[in-house]
Length: 205
Image 1 (cartoon, one colour):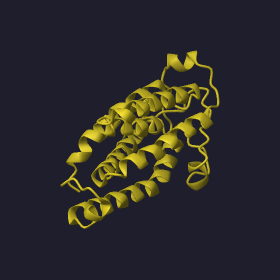
Image 2 (cartoon, helix red, strand yellow):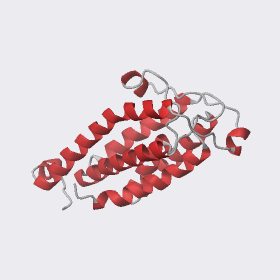
Image 3 (cartoon, one colour):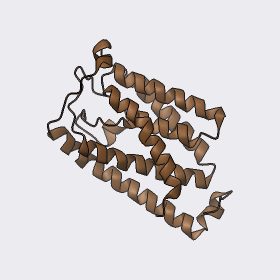
Image 4 (cartoon, one colour):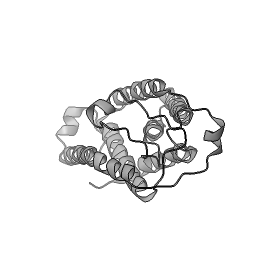
């Protein structure tokens, strides 16, 4: 697929338009499937992982810091990526992949909530999608993963790249402070983000 300079030229390209519509449709399907997957994950029994990092960290409610960082940087990434239709489509496809990866790992890796977990308080998602707290959507960390995704997507742009790396690191640490994830969940997230970014340009959807 050629690189398009404007959205108008991109939209008039049949292949690009089909890729974009299909990707958006699959993301909507994922959003509709997520509550069902989370209900299943919450209802089953899982394993408690030994985690010396969490043992050493007293749990604190830091949701406000997590979501301020998360939503600011998601907004920044959209503003940066939307300037290039090809880059924006690649980002959407990478996000679709990391979402699918996460669905698979959630289903395959049953975990109990970490000891001392304080539920995350997301001012947006809690109001729109989930009425009950979700505490077992653990492996891997989606919050860390999406910021790591932007870090890899913007790897060519050093002006922004390091900021997204720091944001991903900060959110990962704050999630551990809140005991909202095991250390393994946070450490695994960048690996899945990297894989999604590497695979997304090769998608033939």
